[in-house]
Length: 262
Image (cartoon, rainbow, N blue to C red; front, side, top):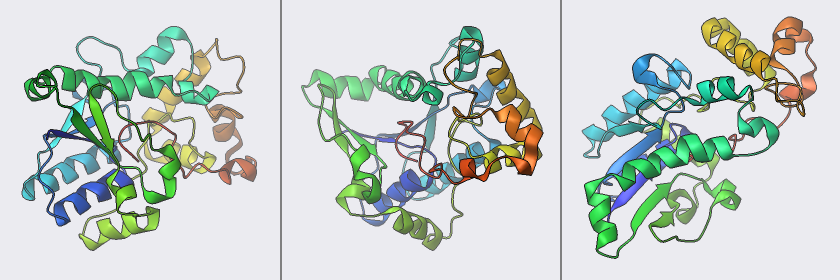
């Protein structure tokens, strides 16, 4: 049986892999994580902390007999999600309540990798399916898709083991590893105002790139900005005076991007 792990770089998918190791599950064929940017060419899609964490955890996996994390992206000369938004003068689809950017920049690159992988090709040629492991936890069972398609069988180990969000964090800490930073594009429309201000302090260069996406989005007439109901520019200009209501919304939940769990 060929197994692929869709690794999101966050708490859930990290704890899922740790538990797989602890429970003696055989190593998967590959651990894939999608880059909405182009890290190799200096075009980060996520915050530096996320890339650093994935690199660290990739080493942990290898120490325990698992394959390292394989970064995938649309590839070649294809544009990043940031470049896509700038070219079309729009915002990431999640700002409008859609998930097409996740499909295009997270799911498709992983599927493209598998489609070009000789081991997966051989499995499909033999009439068998590849198992795709996704790190949704027991508290978000509603996100799981319990059906197979012509190529994949989907498996949600944290749901199988009834491991919720708090347990996921405890698993990581008990292994002596730090908790991952929130995994999301640095310009994620689900960012809280507090997170936007933190980005301004910690990574002002990334904030300016995010504001450029927002200012350039001339076709985004149905929303106020990257925050959907508010603009990031207003958050920065108004500082701590920005309405608290936007900090209290359910932004701690994943943005809905399907990349193997948060």
